[in-house]
Image 1 (tube, rainbow, N blue to C red):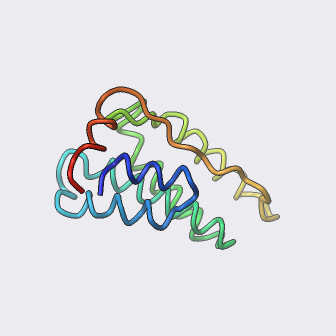
Image 2 (cartoon, rainbow, N blue to C red):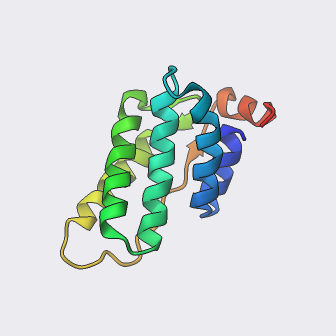
Image 3 (tube, one colour):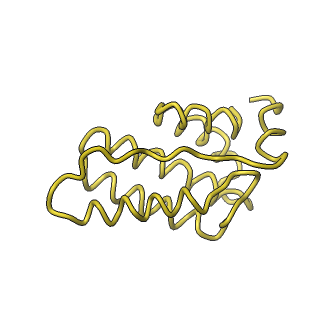
Length: 125
């Protein structure tokens, strides 16, 4: 599966499928230069899934981990705009610190620019 396909799934709220798409790309080269990038996307998607399931601890842990993995790649990597995504996740983490469940968090959309994410869509996957 491609990076672009995972982004499309994520942007349609299909977090588990996006997680799986990116994990397929991550596993063979998880120690390579893009390992943290894919791991960050995987964790952010898992955090969104946990939020939907009202699992506070899972959402917090996955979002925190995902943002941490993505920070070294800011502001963008492989055509993926990461700065806004990480800012959004940081805002979610702040909202999760409150006692009450933060209702109605609007899940982020992953934006792309440049040829890298587009070229990935043409790669076999």
